[in-house]
Image (tube, rainbow, N blue to C red; front, side):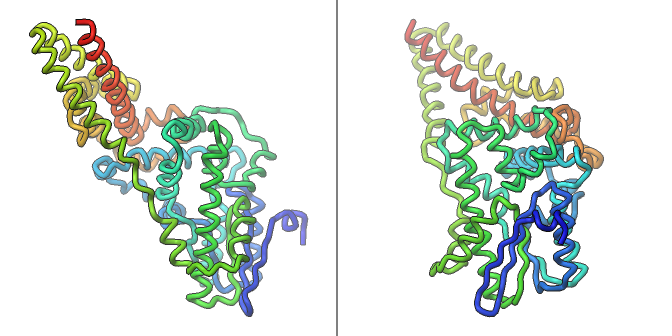
Amino acid sequence: MNSTEQQQPLSIIKFADRQITLLGTAHVSRASAEYVKALLATGDYDAVAVELCPSRYQALINPNALSRMDLLEVLRKGKAAMVTASLALGAYQQRIAEQFGIEPGAEMRAAVDSAHSAKLPVLLIDREVGTTLKRIYRNVPWWQRFNLIGGLFASLISRDTVSEEEVERLKEGDVLETTFSQFAMEAENLYLPLIDERDRYMAARLREEINQNEYRHLLGVIGAGHLRGVTRYLEQDDATPAKKTITELDQIPPPSRWPKIIPWLIVVLVLVGFIFGFYRSPELGWQLIIDWILINGGLAALGALIAGAHPLTIVGAFAAAPLTSLNPTIGAGMVTAAIETFLRRPTVGDFSRLRQETVHIKGWWRNRVTRILLVFLLSTLGSAVGTYVAGFKIIDRLAGA
């Protein structure tokens, strides 16, 4: 065994006459990809489990799947933020990988390709990345969510080169954990629950597969940061059925009631403010309405402008935000994104270049797909800020009248 093989972390868990061998890998390590191939070349395994969820698996085997994304459907279903976050995470991993001439997830691709060549089953044991992001987002206090989002997008802005030693440290975690630990404040509260949940999830999926299919020797290819935790959960004498654990960890915690109630309370207060203003005097009432339009519409338009929107989209943001803010079921971003899509419809080339262009911060503004996502997010943010600023302005004018 050569030195590269000796450095690869392995864990072996035995169940009577069956066995699971877990290999801890680095997601952008050439050595990890080569060792995966070497292990599978031995012919000792009858199934291969990989740290992939169905959506990440599809992206791996079919990188052009993004070209078939229905952007309007993404916006309509409220998935714009999730798609943007996934693109940002992928861009960070791609940026690191580009420095060393290896595709991100090469060890997973090696495992999948080698398993297919050997006609072995490929088992997807990780939780859906969208579910993971939603759970961590819902499980942290609202003020820490800014750290999470800030850390995610700081990974795009940072242009520091990454050393070979730092790449090898990715064996301590995957791209989610690396992103948050490197850039987010209060990182421990953000990524440690994420690691433990996925350790439990992958251990439960391995138990489920080995019990249902009675594989005699299963190879699991997972990020090395999960190796210890998954091993610990597999070795525990857990009486909880694997299916129950999986179902529990697939649940998305319900959102707090306050974020849903607050916008309606603000609408009521604003409308009451308008009525009270006109009751005081028509001049005051009209001044309050002008304040509402200028502040709310102006900040939404500013968000669209920063996103590089078409001039007509910026005008649309200014016109729509004061109205949509009075109806929390419709966001200004939906209107601006629809206008931008109509005026600058993305081409097939825009979709096909997503993986390359999102690596660089300028590419997010150059590519029409990501620019529409930015228009949606930034105009929505501008309108939300404008709602609160204008609301306080109305209260201030009423108090001073």
